[in-house]
Image 1 (spheres, helix red, strand yellow):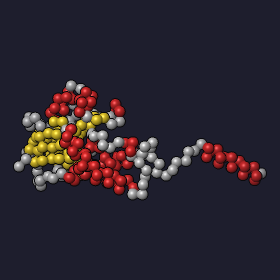
Image 2: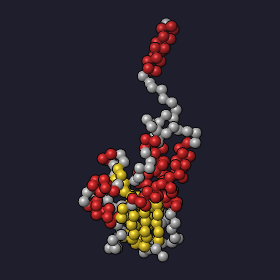
Image 3: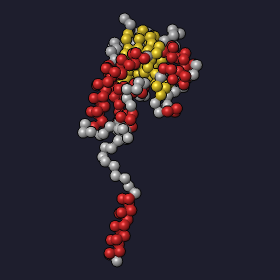
Image 4: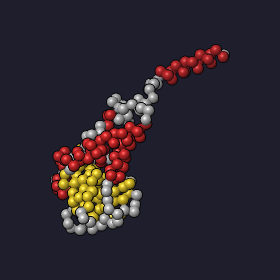
Length: 214
């Protein structure tokens, strides 16, 4: 009886193993980066350090579209405007990511929040046309997705790719040089990135540069 039980258990173990695929620890996607000893934080921090100032910011400044020009193009069709000026990540279901620039007057602000922001009137009608995210909490991954600098296939997995998006946002807001006190009523010039998912959506911009007129 004991021998029969032993043989049955052995056969069950073989069947279980035959239905499993052994994967090496840290194995990523087809072209994904290996895990490495430093962990995600070290790898992502190194990537931000070598690309943010040297590649990302110059690319955004070079390709940035004046916000009024972009908004006029979007009225003619978001997809057409996206193909002309933006980058889409994730297929047809994803939003269009645009490099943008503009000049306007701050008409509303919330600087006390962790997700501080300033709303800017671009066209001079006294109403906000765009919102600048000033952090430290920043929504979205527009900085990561607006250029083609960061290819998902070169990352280990979605988790590491998401960490890059957050790290770029952190770097952007920490690099802004803003005066102390209220920004309301001040004229600002900005360069940044935004993700647009519908033609009626007001741009929520992650700036890499904000200059305040004296």
